[in-house]
Image 1: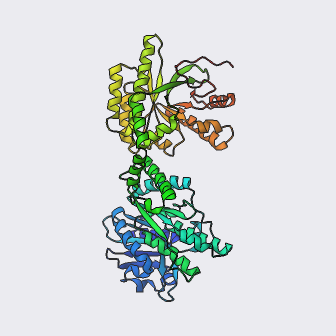
Image 2: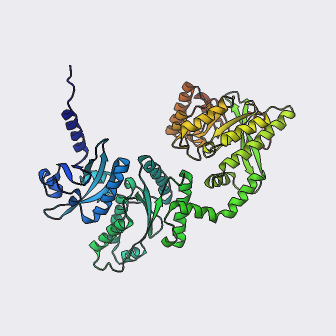
Image 3: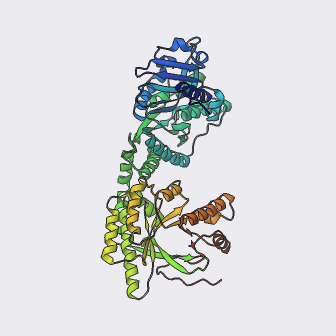
Length: 542
């Protein structure tokens, strides 16, 4: 019979686990006094553990690191976690410095802070911040996606992030005085500095030939980043007076912006910086979103007029049962009367927050069409798309149900597809609204399943009737083992859950045969029919 482990045994195990991942452990009180130190203390800071006890923890680090660490400590008392952050340790014996990655946390009912530092070069190399690693920065598109993920991650962790833009024109001129090898080495080191200070070590981008963007913890100042770069210059040149780095830091408050607004504001900001320079950039990301709206005021007015005046048309594309290919229902697809891309206009509508107005206008026109067909003796069932933005707006489902009640539209004529174009944050709340539709007999489908990172999260959090498999996976299934496996497993999982599957963008006989073979229930695509102004379907000739 195993003995119950003592508190000391448990503590020893946790210390062992910590040292397995770190070189140096610290425990400090709320005044910053070191209570406990362990690990490679002597090697890194020149003092043993006993000598460190009672000292102020900041004395272990270079002066340049102090301000950031002070601010970090304030942050950890709010969020309970600290870092990761790249810092510099100061060895008291020889004044040599060494880089280390610091992380920390607090425990409930305890004012002390527990810190772990890793200074092993192989570990830093693994994080791609070692001296011999590839330091290439993200492209603008990669940076855009990384930024949104960083904002979401920080929001969940209770952290605030900033975006610093750097104008390094003077540095580019300085590099022209170096040899090719020297210039390349300098560039690698400068990019390494930017990655080191960026959020999770991979949120930095070269926006232009001499402009950079870095997303970082709001406890790291642009002055700190600038000094790092100037120190690098000082190591290669004695004449640094004429080499100035201009910077501008933006507050990225995700309490003010949703995911789509933040993405749009970031793209707008980067474009403004490229066109007009760093001084034209506002110091708040939400202000830049407002500027984006002002710049597009005429376009916004035109789109609102199109929606309010119902100056658009609906086309209808059939969805067929498989393998019989008999009609099931039609998807209502928005088409503007002007020569504008419906996709771009819909996305723009979501950017400016009027997706619910667009969805409601489409609903009214779609329901009107079904009622007109009923009067002609033609029963038709159509699917109306609902944006993720719409289903989260207060009162939207009240308005939707009011249209249904006023028109007497029945489940035999109407169902709904929820798109992933805007992330759904409060799934339980949205699920309650969805059930208001389903209890009345209206089916609800998740559109473009697999295209967004949250698809399976939605399937788990929302009680729905159907998923529509994103056309990209349908198109590539016969050429990609990964896509084939995903669709096959998704079809099997949905069968187990009692959820219907629809494969969109079926365009070839081979794709159709494969979807039938893995048990997909319904299909949509040009193989059956293209969208048409009328909801009609003539069975194709084989």
